[in-house]
Amino acid sequence: MSVTGLCQICENAPARHGCRYCGRQVCRDHWNEAVGACTPCAESSGVDDSDGSTG
Ligand SMILES: [Zn+2]
Ligand SMILES: [Zn+2]
Image (tube, rainbow, N blue to C red; front, side, top):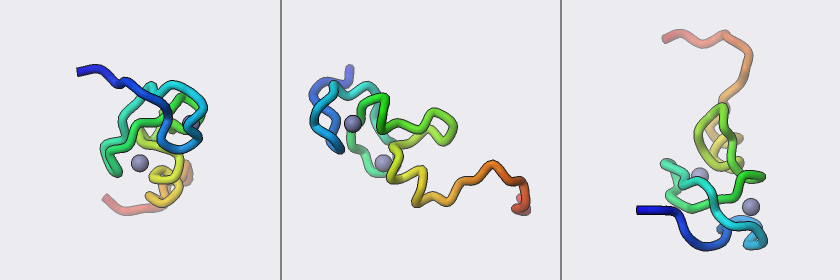
């Protein structure tokens, strides 16, 4: 199963990745490689580089 269609965020670029959180397909510009999710989910997730969480 391959990702086909346009980015569901900007709808201007071909989708390259499928977010496992919201399930929508996004282009590279809206993909956060570090988090492994689309940019909205990555930001909402609150993932930060700072290491200050337990567990
Ligand atoms: Zn996009
Ligand atoms: Zn997402």
